[in-house]
Image (cartoon, rainbow, N blue to C red; front, side, top):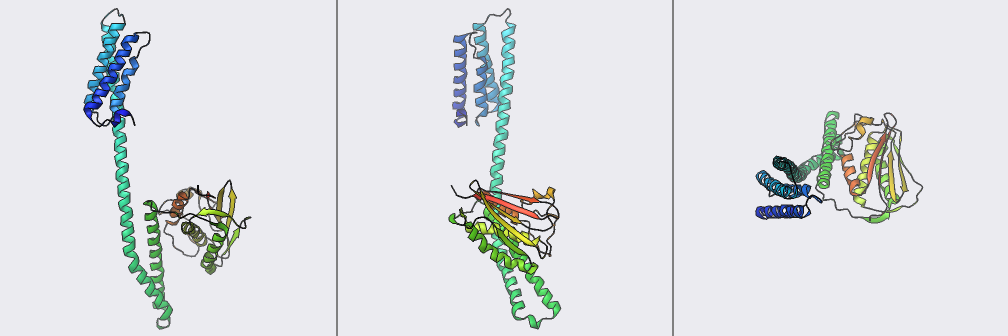
Amino acid sequence: MFFIDRIKSKPLAILFTLAFIGLMAFLDYITGTELSFSVFYLIPIALLAVGRTSSKRQIIIISFIAAACWYFVDVQTTSYSHQFYPFWNANVRWVISIAIGLLVSNFREKHDQLEDTITKLNYLNDEKNKFIGIAAHDIRNPISGVYSFSELLLDEDKSKMNDEELEIVKIIKSLSQEILDLIKNLLDVSKIESGKIDLNYQRQDYISFIKNLLKINQLLATPKNISIKLESKHIELTTDFDAHYMSVVINNLLSNAIKFSEKNTVITIKISEHNNRVLTEVIDNGKGIALDEQNKLFNYFQKSSTKPTDGESSTGLGLAIVKNIINNFKGTIGLKSNLNEGSNFYFTFPVKND
């Protein structure tokens, strides 16, 4: 920021500006018409306008003083056929000085208002994240109880219930699971937006890590008879990453691929390395996503018109969480998809965390 903006006292700011104008007048006077410093009279006025201690009244007064000095030097160093001309020039210069000063002052005020608005929005966002975190934690406990009791009824008392009662308990279990998933995602969003992600980078084999996650997700894909296979020319690929948050990314992408894939199909996860960056692709053979919907999918609570193939639910939070995590990994994420041709969700991250 300009030096004048660092001066907190109004008198000091005005004295600095007047001294600057005096210096310009002196230089203008001793150089005469051979080297005119006329335009430089505008500099102290602009600097004063930038300073947060200045007012519009001060700008007008200082502009008048600058125009008067300008007029005095002009009369002393230049010969005119009539006194009207330097007087006219001085008034024009005064108007120009006021206009420039007020324009700079208005710009500074708008800038300050924008900074205040950003500060308030950041505060409100932090409060929102705190509220979401508290509310989600408070809701999770009773919902977990509902889910556990419904699971207990299905495991131990299934034979004591008729078909209608059994169906109701299954619905209770399914709905409570959906709520728990939503709460988990909300907590992840709250943590990410509040900047509380503490990445624990470790040097480890990415291929082995992915294989372990595929075993878990294959169990989830089995009811739809979907196979998940890994393709990579690398037997091992040692990279730096946080295992917990990377598993959130992979599990989200594979979960979506399973939801939107038809039964009896194959999901492929490809891993390659280019220019010291790891490329991971999750490719399904589902219904695909319309081009005009693809850019929105990585925003919170955004869903595509494509529906899960077996009635699965979606909160619209998973991809937004994934994008934020990948950004924290200093990576990029994207999507390639056409309707009825499947989807390819891909992301990259550096091999080494420098």
